[in-house]
Image (cartoon, rainbow, N blue to C red; front, side, top):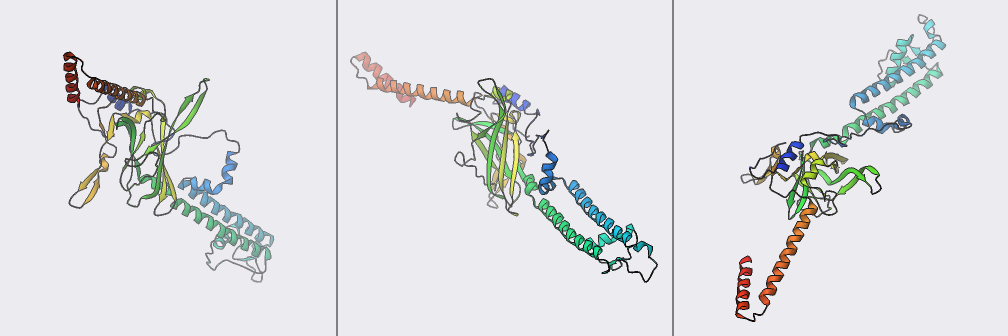
Length: 394
């Protein structure tokens, strides 16, 4: 990750945070959105996957899919070849190969190899014209009809699976970018957690929404440890209202979470952030414009990937010659350190509250003192001096 150093404002906590950000710890969701959770000791797991065979085949890697398809076709050819060979043996066609007066079930089918070739030619309607079916053998005719129907069924299944795998929007997520680090910065007197998301394609995802959950263990008052509790984070973009999850990805967007008293980060300070154990999982959903299919993109941030006292580097530059905007993706992951408090959002709010309260008391005292009627020359002089001090502060 690139960052810009500004001398004089990088605090020791910021330095430790940036050094700590280079660590890698166990996570639930990888940076590319893959789950790191494995399911074990499931009763009847294989049977359940077989019952949902279509989804199971869709989730398989391409090399395994191709192997399954090839094996399925080969077994179907082999199975019907065995049936044709049994018919050949029962009808004794192999004993009358050189008899011109003999009426076989299949022309030019006299051993297992020729029966296998006849099975392939029948199932895929190759029609070489060398091997054919004779009407004098009803069982063979019935088997041929069955193989023709099963062959069409296999073709439809394989074609549908290949089309479904090719049109899946899973690879569309490859062009959605999330910033490598999230940052915590002070804006308008309160703390905000910020990260960046962008789309590299010109055909954008439509109807985009974004959500985030903070996952961590929770200790109850009774001492029970509840693992992996999910705490929703209220997100908003630079100009949206809090809780509005809609995101327009025509350009990279900064998504933020206001750390309020309802936030699970309310009591987290810069020092505590380095020792916290949680994971923020971000989920972006939308419809692929070119296919109309819904896609989901995921990433996550660990405490080691959240930089306290940083802001995201600007990306947009206006070009006067073309009247358009230029996006510098080289700065997409860059951050800039800023000078800000290292206390938690709760402590910052309490400080601001005390400042406002003291300011109100001071102003009230000055006003009361100014409005007090002077009864003597000394009171009059003090009254005028207090008024002058109040004007100077104003």
